Length: 140
Image 1 (cartoon, rainbow, N blue to C red):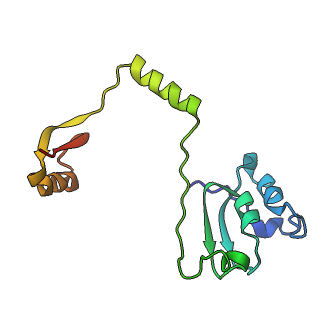
Image 2 (image 1 turned 180 degrees about the horizontal axis):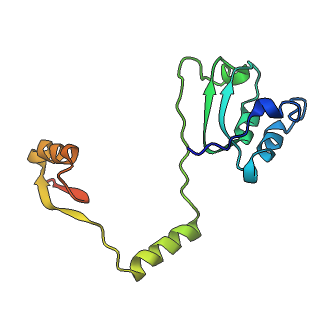
Image 3 (image 1 turned 90 degrees about the horizontal axis):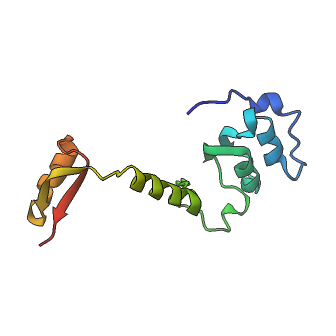
C-alpha cells in the first residue's frame, strides 16, 4: 500500500469533529482527495460512517473498542473482516467482452483433465504449481 504521508495529528486543528461532514473534510486534506490509508476507531462514538467517508478505496479500518451503535447493529463478538470488491459498470463489462472477442482471447487450460476420482492429484498439482492456467475436473 502506498501511504499518502498525511498525518491526521497535524490536521487536528483543521478537522473539527463538530463538523457534520468531517469525514469528507478529512478526505479533502489528502493528496487528490483520495482519502486516508488507515483509520483506528477508538473514540467510542458512533462515527463509523464519517470514518468510512474519510478512508480511501482499499484503506484499512480497525476498531479498537466497541463503538456506539455497532453493538445495537449486531456486531458484538463477530469481529467481521469486510472487504469491498470493485466490479465495474455494465458498460465496462461490455467493453471487456468486445476486447476479448476482438483479440480472440481464449482461456489458458492445463493439458491434464482430471477425473473426479483423481481430484486429490489435481489439488496436489495446484498446490505444487505444476499446472498452467485453469484446471479441469471431469465428473463422469
